[in-house]
Image 1 (cartoon, rainbow over the protein chains, first blue to last red):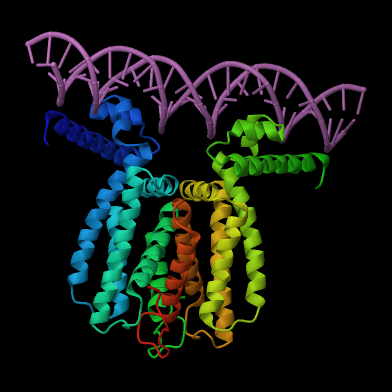
Image 2: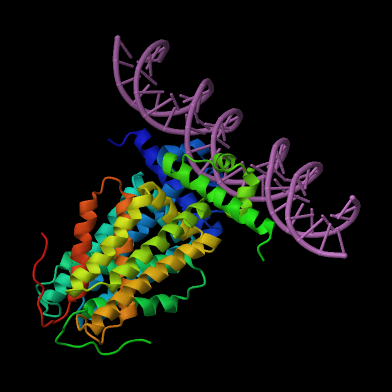
Length: 214
Length: 214
DNA sequence: CTTCAAAATAAAGTCAATTCAGATTTTTTG
DNA sequence: CAAAAAATCTGAATTGACTTTATTTTGAAG
């Protein structure tokens, strides 16, 4: 199982990923050439393509790793005690946003997202989509938790709610990374406004919403 | 104002767009070279770059045109009579989806979206973002209309609601175009489930939701 | 009708992702 | 262990978007 070849292969994969990680973060995606990654990893440029189907695939592999961390954080968050539904959900989604910006720049996210759309079938395109699916599921878990605590109506489709909430944070985050001039505070306030609407709903509701941001 | 030169310029712009439109639709984005577009439009390749900043910019220009049509349809839709909020909103969003697939293939949408994220500052990247903003605003208008008709609570932030609803349809549409194997029916059903959640809200509500799709 | 300047043009050049035909290394076989 | 087979590596060649340049065209203005 663990022949020389397998170990070398795993090592080389790590080397390439580490090299890409370093260069992407230092120089950005556009300014990093596959040749430079190969040189730093001490392999031929062609070898990079034996492990990753494209430069974008390599980036998505890094993003997927980060996604795992975000989900781990999320799992702990869910286990905490929560007061009201709005704050609980907003807290989780804000945590995702904050985590996303720890290791990766906006430019890297732009390129990761672009690649995820155009190359969804590549190995790490699949990982990327799977990660999104799992995160949406995690938001759904939080909704279930809140339902059990009587903070969310039990007749709500938790899975659909999780997916909707996650799509919103994802979409806003995409707008955020696409426009460098958009401030993080603008992202936060839009997120708050929109999640507030979703939590409160549009139709007749016993507990009226409290406030609206201008 | 309308000298011969200006008209020629406008004409050339149209020629290039028309050529791009034809080739993109026939051969797809990836398989269409800028050289081929230039040849069909009977201009030099360099001229194409006098009018559009990149191949992706050219595609976004086409998409923006389509977006205008979609908004025109949407405006008429809003003016109609609406029964309940859920159906009214779902109808508008479904109309957007249907319209998007009339003229453009999934592959074109993938590339348009990818370009919109990575080149948001290019001339038609701005148009693309603006179009999204206007569509979200249009959904907001529908919400206002429904509020006036007493079908949506008046304390709801209509603008935020429109933005949230549009982000959802946009996000689901993105998932749809990214994965060729995803059926249109899957898109529709997810859209229905998620919009249902948003309209109904998560917290205590006078009118309980009626049903849930499995 | 001449001059001017904007715009177009073709051609040649740059650049970097991706591919590919052979070279090299590991594993398997006898 | 030696030879054959299989997997992997390699970097030079390909490809196509985009740029640059030197030259030409053509409205517009006097």
